Length: 255
Image (cartoon, rainbow, N blue to C red):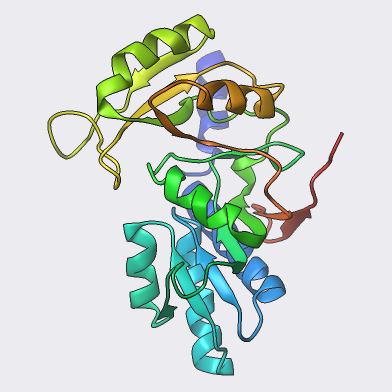
């Protein structure tokens, strides 16, 4: 009887395809809400990277086509450049537009202060440059990315981009800081992931991060560290698409 009861419970679980459909719908809702609220005619828009940003670029393309919206777009990665071309957005660069009006990007995890971990796609150096030079940065994500502390949901570690020469000694230093670094390996080729800048990535787990600002400073002091996937006190607002079809809008809770 116990076995039959357990089988009945399992049969009521939604199939994985239904869950993934809900996640993709949540991403799309969040991205569209952010674009509609923040992007206006004449803006220079920083385009981030990742699966949620695809829907932001899609919405920008719709608004350009339907409303005659005039915007210029600065990409943060090769993927972002492709999205700009796909949706027929005007491509620009920092030489022409050194200041960005609004940057829209996803995140791997977000805490209540809207500090976030980014870099799952290996583009966090370019992403941080775009975000740092934007007047406003808004996060677009699905409901799975919101957490109480960084490191709670995203357990793959904080991405740390390092020059190849220094990756072994930096791994030793990270262990001294109670981190567990792992060299990110490529899936479609033999050897490690190489970033757009020719560097390597150490995904480093620190457990729950209670003071991301202090940790970021410590990590960036290590010679050979190019950039850290901690984005601290940069976001103005976050949009989290929910499984029920709504969008949760969050402002940073500053201590």
